[in-house]
Length: 266
Image 1 (cartoon, rainbow, N blue to C red):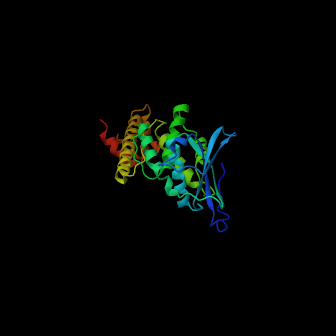
Image 2 (cartoon, one colour; image 1 turned 30 degrees about the horizontal axis):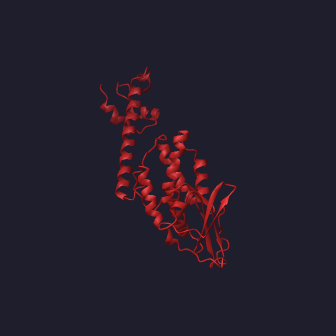
Image 3 (tube, rainbow, N blue to C red; image 1 turned 90 degrees about the vertical axis):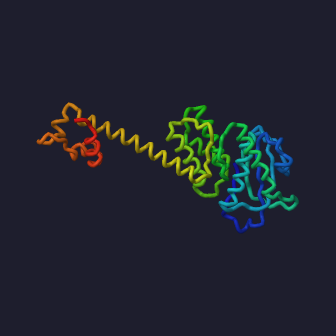
């Protein structure tokens, strides 16, 4: 995939941009998507490539985010991918404004509904695409190979950061989400725009983790004081349990040990 560099920004201030998308997207042309300036068949990819001459040179993270949104909406709506994205200077072609592609937003949302994806969409369609692709990998392989997911993102979207940190962060967030849930398919892509909903989910997760830790600690303490050598290892001369020794042995806070010892039957 061709990309562009920020090294010659000043020189290219008056340049425009060629966006090329390859795939079966001709049915989208019309009201929602402007007709391309040109098209051709790629023997290398065995697919049609459609070219739009876009007004402007996209050299900032904010500008690139707009382009990536367009690419992501294309990908959600139809079987296609980015072919190339390059700054050019062409005198005999009238450039197309980026806002001419706004119709893709409703098409993408309709497609997500058709796929039975119950989604809270915010403006991050790129992340939506990454999650959908991740679920494809899980269905095929039972898990997500992070390097494969990252390579897919680099191939399909644009990141002008030298280390591609923006796309890496999205891929890592997606991978971590599924890893934490043992690769269970979510079935729905939930990109939450409701801050309260996000916080509620985090709080519930924290409560679940706390309950799990509590049960683990109780079982550890119970096993320690009922073991074969428990009396020799952890009993004081007066017959009571030595909470400090138990805590050191189990690597648990002594206050936690005292709390759960008090709950154990005599």
